[in-house]
Amino acid sequence: MLFQLLGIALLAVPKALAHGGVMAISNGGNWYNGWQPYNSPTGQASIIRPWATYDPITDATASTVHCNDDGTSPSLQMTATVAAGSKITGYWNQVWPHPYGPMLVYLAQCPGTTCTGVNTRSLKWFKIDEAGLLSGTVGKGYWGSGKMIDSNCSWTSTIPSTVPSGPYMIRFETIALHSLPAQLYPECAQLQITGGGNVSPSSSQLVSFPGAYSNSDPGLTVNLYTNEAMTQTTYIIPGPPLYGSSSNPSSTQAPPTTTKTTTSSGPTNTGSTGTIAQYGQCGGIGWTGPTGCVSPYTCTVVNPYYSQCL
Ligand SMILES: [Cu+2]
Image 1 (cartoon, rainbow, N blue to C red):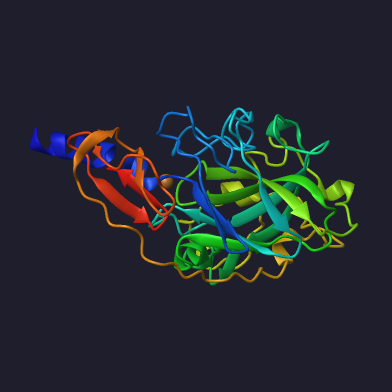
Image 2: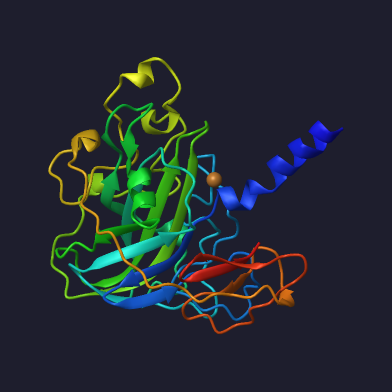
C-alpha cells in the first residue's frame, strides 16, 4: 500500500515539471514574455503562438507538430520586429530535464504583410540552426539539448542576414531522446524581419509540419541504451538540410555557436494565497498580473521571466 502510494506520487507529481516549452524570447535587448498554457487564454498577448500543454508530442507526424497547437493566432497576437543578422534567444523551463537530443530552429515566411491570422500548419519552413550530438557517443555524449541546459536553459540562434525581409514565424524545437518514441517540444513566435537580404531558401530546404519528419527517421528512433550507442559517434539530425547549405548531409554540419546569456535575478515571490491555479504564471520580469496561488500551491521562480504556481 505504501509502495503503491509512493509510486503514484512519483509518477504524478513530476509530470508538468518534467516537460514544458519555450517560456520567453529575447532579441536585441528586448524581452518577450511567452504564452502561458496553464493560464486562461483570455487577455493573453504574446509574440509566441498559443500552445496547450507541457506534454511532449510523441508522434512526429502529429497535426500539432508545427507549433504545438492548432496553428491559429489569438486575438491579441503580437509580433516582434527583429533585424536580419541579429541574435534571438528562446528560454525553456528551468531546469530543462532532457539533455539527450538535438536542438533545431526554423523560420517560415508568411504570405502578405503579417503572420497574424496565418495558420502555421500552412507554412513552408526552413531550418536556420541545428545542434545534434556535439561530442562523445550517442549513449553518453554531449548533445545540443545539454548545451541548451548549460546555457541557462536557453538557445541562441542568428537570424540569417540573407533572408528576405518580411513576416516570419520562428520555430524553436528541442527533441528528447531519453525514451522512445522521441519527444518533440516545438513552439513558435511571430516576427517581422527587417534589413534582410535576397536569398530565399531552396525547394529542398523547405518543409511542412507535419511532413518534415517521419516516425522512422533515424534521428528519432535512435536508442541511447544499446551497446552500439555506447560507441556510435554519429547522429543524423531530423529535418531538411540547413538554409544556406549547398548539400544536404545534415549530420556533418558544423554545430552552431551559441551565446550563453546572463540574466538578472528575478523577483522573489511570496506564497500568499491567491487566485492562480496550478501551473499558472504568477510572476517574472514584466509580469503585471496577480501573484497569489490557490492553496496549496506556491508561486515558484522557474526562471527570471517566469514564476509558476507549483
Ligand atoms: Cu519532459
